[in-house]
Image (cartoon, rainbow, N blue to C red):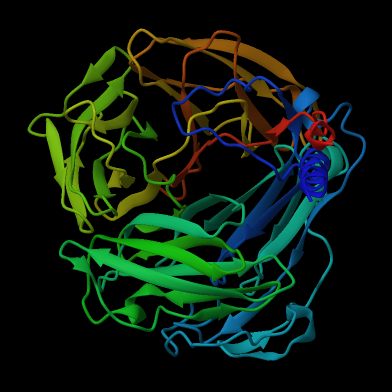
Length: 534
């Protein structure tokens, strides 16, 4: 019996090395060195989910897929596949497809629902199959972006996977420009890695906002999802956010205001997949401030960093939540190019357990690049918090909003796709005093041609730095930025802003750059100790 058990353990370890699923992820800010007796290996399969981009008749969406070259990408990058395919859409589930109208409340379903390609009905509403099932932005090799675009108001959600040498670091940027209407502006999103839990501080159910959470199932089996909203006084109540069935290879958009009768300007959303896994993202449309995607924040942690506040931000709103059973007291600091400062009148922030707190920080950056750093006020608290920022640029009727969620540090590597010759700003922050960050930034080849360029930047500990990223020599098309810590670097966080003005509106979007987790720690195979029991 003992020998059998040890053999099974050996098989599990071997499978982990082959598939790359036996990941051991250290907590943010921890020691990320491989423990003795383990090896860091590239993952062999990655999955992504991209929500339906827009229902606007005047919208244009660009997809940019990329996988970085290098040892972590598995050699020369000539083997492997990576592509997205259209997913089905469930209509009338807590709203309607692609954010049109309010529709019916979210349906409760058991395990019903067939593969989206079959076009069958689902327990959560009518399942509509995609019109086209051709792969979108398939990658041919690592190091060179692949692109695709659509101007269809019925563009579907996308699901897909990468394997082999294209799996480590595979990223897809979805960028949508809407020329007019309530959703006008620039919306950007890194397509989501499927998971079981997501946190979205900063959502709203107020009358001037339409927030849809898009739940996308990349797998061949149904997922069952619960949604919970928390406002300034705790749970917003309602039962329509429970037992939402997301059919295989399909997406369910849910209008958050249909989940509660208590409108809340500032709220937090928790998404939990009780069965299966999903990708989740919130599309927020404001009557005056345009629209953008609110990505999930990093898992709740005692200390959080929100990088990349634009230097010309007209207003900054912090929304935070302590989801556990204890209150949290946080020290609030802004990392600037010259050091850490405390915003006037906000030395500390008290978060009541289970309640969403919002603070308007106004023009926080005062014309300088900045990143917000939240740490325990007493230095030893372990109360986890989730946080996000809503940032606006512009004045009067020509304002535009974007969101910056708390993010993970870049431990090994992170990537931002869909950069052009102009309009990109890279933000780097080293939040710990005395621990300078040395950051290697590589501009990839362009999607239509160009030679990669690499530069190294120093970010002094306790500061934030905005820079114009390098551009490939002879660039044609779009390119990707990959950031990595140089040898001996201190911890750092990163974000990328895209700015593409539209008729006097300073349209922009910000994507944080968490570590891509393209490698995993896998224990090395050891001796079968059962032989010692003979």
